[in-house]
Length: 248
Image: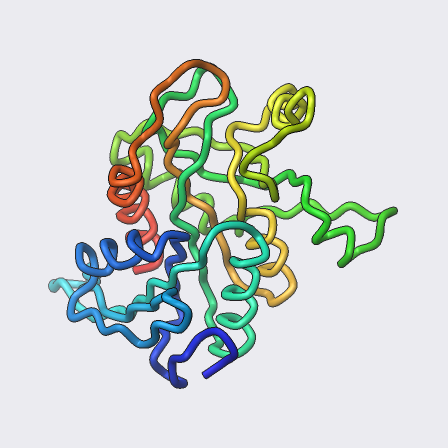
């Protein structure tokens, strides 16, 4: 048990899927886990632990094992996600964390419901300035093995996906003129979201594997009707399958 995670030792798997929305976490657990158990619900940010059947080809047979998976909601933004990633890694010994989230496209070539596999994350957050000082800039990147396997899975499944930098911001509503996202888009950032830079930084600090898989739910570079709140809950099915395939 930790400050914000009420589970006991052993109740959280060493692999955690990390959606922001508690409703998405519940939907993912019900859809993808066998025998999911709610292991805590502190502050309405539940964690579910269940298992997946994993199959492996051995000489003359097909072996089946059970792989424990946990799904923890993390809330919105880097301060909230940072709390859960910190406690999962430090207090529960989690080894792999895959964020399953949504984002806003910054490039014309990207369509709604496309998948973004985040190689790295730019940010306007002061978090890493506090961590490293104003004269040093840290470049948060995905775990190379998880990233490689996610790309292969997306290709094998024939899914529309893009790989590159994302822009992780502290402000959902940006009132600066011009909006900060435009500069990052000019330098090739694919999408804007609010968590990946913190996830990758903490993963580097704790020596764990991390990856952000995102679904485009709205578009900043062109006029598009965004996904509804209900659609944002259920739009992560494809990225959940990618995540489960590469960890199981």
